Amino acid sequence: MARTGGAGAGGVSAFIVERATPGLSVGKSDRKMGQRGAHTADVIFENCRVPAENLIGEREGQGFKTAMKVLDKGRLTIAAACVGSATRMLGDTLRYTRERKQFGQPIGEFQLVAALLADSQAELYAARSMVQDAARRRDAGEDVSLHASCCKLFASEMCGRIADRCVQAHGGAGYISDYAIERFYRDVRLFRIFEGTSQIQQVIIGRGLARSGELIQG
Ligand SMILES: Cc1cc2nc3c(=O)[nH]c(=O)nc-3n(C[C@H](O)[C@H](O)[C@H](O)COP(=O)(O)OP(=O)(O)OC[C@H]3O[C@@H](n4cnc5c(N)ncnc54)[C@H](O)[C@@H]3O)c2cc1C
Image 1 (cartoon, rainbow, N blue to C red):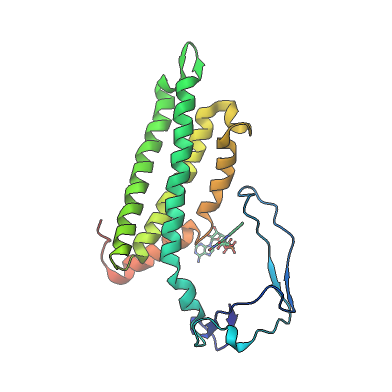
Image 2 (tube, helix red, strand yellow):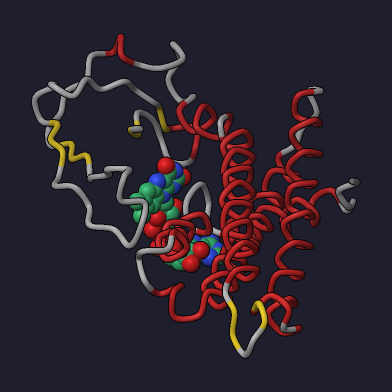
């Protein structure tokens, strides 16, 4: 993305820049809290000249719009990934709490452990239902910007809460990397940050409600 015109979103254009272009370099791989299988790095542009034919969308000033166009789908996709990760974490934890015994009984039979699972199951079901509803609406051609932000906000926060409860239900084992939950706990933290942080989703939803004066219908 580069500013080719004046101030504001209308002055931004999007380009394809080939990796071998003089002036383009890639920084060293980030050392991350999680998602270590997905390599990321800074892409650095220094006096990097890009031919005009590399402009995406043929017209200047469309770059910001182009980026925004993919957001609804991206946010729904992240929300679905949150539902998938939470399903795996809760499934592993259900199995663990049925197998692990303390004081002569499976730990899942202690009411306080069962409550961790119950809250997680209820929230997971809610997030799954939201994502399916919004995805169906998008497939039917509806404008789902606010639905997508609601899904991203709720599903990513839900996923974080479930990761935390699942580590708790594993006890000390949850902190040891022999169990997948230790990795998931780190991996899912990014869901609340990328594709628009939770605060940015709150801003979008709040602004949308203020503008339209109408609630989103389910
Ligand atoms: C490994 C990795 C991969 C990533 N991949 C992607 C990706 O593929 N796609 C993608 O979209 N993003 C991705 N991101 C996220 C992106 O790079 C930014 O980190 C993210 O958009 C937040 O911006 P920032 O880090 O500059 O934080 P800042 O903008 O500095 O925000 C810091 C804090 O301030 C809050 N804040 C900022 N502005 C406002 C505001 N207007 N109102 C209220 N609160 C505000 C934020 O919510 C946050 O809590 C990735 C991040 C990482 C670490």
